[in-house]
Length: 169
Image (cartoon, rainbow, N blue to C red; front, side):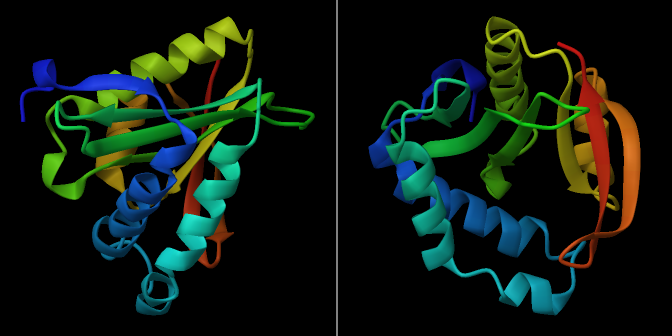
């Protein structure tokens, strides 16, 4: 899948189903080696649909979801950046997922570039993201794009250890 044939655009409300399926697939396939079987089996596609339908239906001027799609419209990657009300971070990057069979083709880098453009346009000064601590490939990807390890949470989220990274765009 040559990245030249892909386009990155802002997600629209009708993308919720495709984004939900992509992230659900990523969580149940790509995350399986890093999370407990119970965690993976607890992922329900219906909950992903509900969450993304809600996220994409609102008008969030300080949040954006981007999708990478093929010429036929098939979404193969997504990322979201949203403002935070936190003492330390003013935004969070989350929902960064690429179709498992399409990793390694530059899709994540295209999405990251677009996300960083948005962060700069919003004047975010300190952005966080969480990644499964044992996911070395994802950690290398984020570090390659300038993210720096900020903290590690051994108890993590839902029992999965998480590494917190930060970026000053």
